[in-house]
Image 1 (cartoon, rainbow, N blue to C red):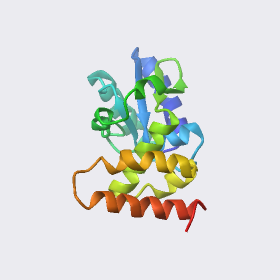
Image 2: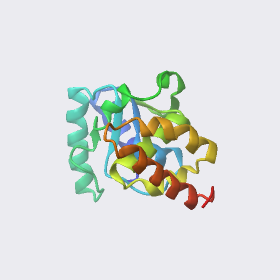
Image 3: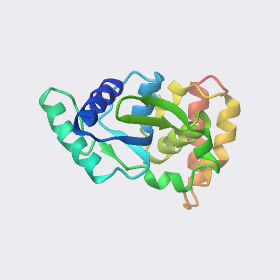
Image 4: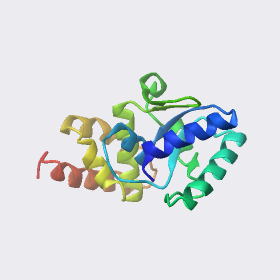
Length: 179
C-alpha cells in the first residue's frame, strides 16, 4: 500500500461511517507518510491506543475493498502489533509526539525522531529486516551512540548486546560513520 494514499482514503471511509480515530502510528507507514521512505507497506502499526472494535471492523471492511481495487494490504492492516513497545520506550515519549496526518475523521501522530529511530533500530536488531529504513532515517553517529544503550537493554539474552553492537556497526559503516 502507499501509506499516505491509504490513510487519506481510510479517513474518508471513517468519516462516511461516522467514526473517528486518533492514534500514534510507527513503522514503515509512519516513515512513508513523513516522506523518509517511498516504499509501500502492507500495514499500519498502531502503537497507542488499542484500535476500538468499531474502527477495527471498519478497517477490515475497508481493507477488503482496497484489496479488490488492487491495493496490497494485510487483512489486519490497521493493527496494534507493536503495542508492547509503549511500555519500554524512553520516558516522556508521549511528550515528543509529532503530527503525522490530520483529516476529517482520522488524526495520526508518530513518535519524535529519537524515539522513532530507536523503535526502528530495535526492529532492525530484532527482526533483521529494517536495515533500509534505518539507512533512510540517516542517523548521525551521535544518534546511533545515544540509541545503542537503549536498544541493548531490550532483550535479556546474554548475546543480545553483542548482536546489537554488530548490527549498529554495520549500519554505521553503511552510513559512512566509520569502518
